[in-house]
Image (cartoon, rainbow, N blue to C red; front, side, top):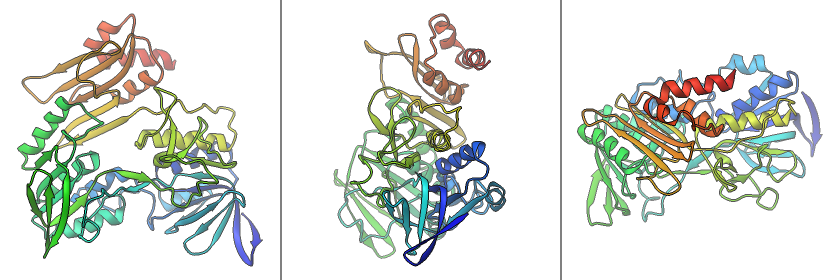
Length: 430
């Protein structure tokens, strides 16, 4: 690695700088190394540990996952890949004109090309007294370990937010023996992932296992009370718990980006090559606001498969790989396991019934917990969601992204979506 002198400081000059070490950043490293085996890569992570996936954190809370065994890469990977991994370093400023970043230590790192894959942080709701009340969030290994330690001697927990993070945490805290209450201001849990019918089925599974779920009411304020906390709802109900977890969403980590240098909206705006408005700067993952598969608008699509796809796209473009394929746009894709049940949602799933534009094929088992919903637009599959159904979300997602026409097999696909989908995709992949 070349070194350059800058204002009496020695700093590394690297062809590739990547900010963030989770799925998007690691995918970019792999894509770069497919084409350029020698160019120096610096990977900067705010975490002090090896890279991990946020999806494993609820299982660290419950003790099902060993925090020492959840890492996505080990030290050998970085050594053999020729990657300088700077852990425990926070980027405080990105200077796109000088092509350098300034770290919290004061150290400066210069680059030729940079990828911002800095992820997201918990977004706190505007609840009076929240900041003065002890609470937890769940986004890092440190967060998970703090919750695990705190829950060891706490009999009850209140979780604000009934999204994926909140519901995962509710299950794992309940398994740890706590009495758990979930508060969701929307009329249902998991809004944006499942329709009301599917959400009610999941709701019942939690209720049957002793998890109390309150939907449709906002929190007016929270207060600390000795070793507990009190949560007041707009309907006048007061709740008391010994551990408070806030899981009301996330927001992209863009605090080190200057809006006058890089175009921002909700996140960093990027094109189908994951390039930002600044020369030599790409963005991917939770921080990137990229094109939607279904329209011209650019959206945040903070899901693991998309982070990998965007990171790979950015990495290929950074090395000018001749096999480069532009980003096709994001579609919501989520898999969810709860109390040994399996669910997923892909694409458009919130429709309650058929309309002029979309057609819905719904199957619900009356004898067991089984739900299957396929959404079509003419002869195209545009969405699917399921609970304990024999479907492959990866194949369904690829069918949607590839705009596979079901004109000749729609009836068969509705009856046998798994086998028919596999047959269709195998013919396309040949």
